Amino acid sequence: MSGTVTLLLVRHGLTPLTGGSLAGRTPGVHLDDRGRAQAAAVARRLAPLDLAAIVTSPLERCRETAEAIAGANPDAPAPVIDDRFSECDYGEWTGRTLKELAEEPMWRVVQQHPSAARFPGGEGLAETAHRAVGAVRDWNTRLLAGHAQPVYLVCSHGDVIKAIVADALGLHLDQFQRVTADPCSVTAIRYTETRPFVLRSNDVGGSIDGLAPSAETSGDAVVGGGAGAVPAGESHVVP
Image (cartoon, rainbow, N blue to C red; front, side):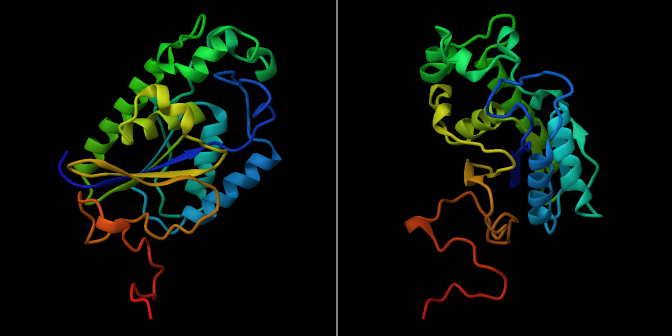
């Protein structure tokens, strides 16, 4: 890959099933009042960014979140559905309560050895990770062909986002449970010619300063950690 691409990963907002049951690919699961408020809030935060694309899982809760983000900026592109960012197919686990699933023998595998987890009648978490990471690579290449330093957004699901972050950090999938993606959180990854940088993870209310690339953006790590993003009008100089 030649160039720099910034990916913003946004998890969908809350639904009536979030946190209590494994919604998975259950059709007709929409944002509730809390989720719509979350989507509106993240849309306001991201509105100043010039997005080259808005991509979403085909499931309703993600499409509604992506549509809110697109609607907050009159110059934003219309959301595009990419099935590769869909939720993991949890098969027979779909729709069951998390309390009930925690009693299943495979629960411990999902927690401690997720790369070996395959849901009965569904897919394996390794397959979910493979398709999602492959989709990111495809979109990076596609957008670089028509944009200089593009920034784009993908609205997806918790396990999908965690898998993409684990890949960016160079972690084995068995470590992806260490990553958190709360509803309507923003996770930002900058892909450069040499390596990705995780700029932000599970951000539920911070400034968007630093998410847009600058002329100084490169593939080099900042020695000593750097000064971070500086809001417009402020200086890096410390009195």
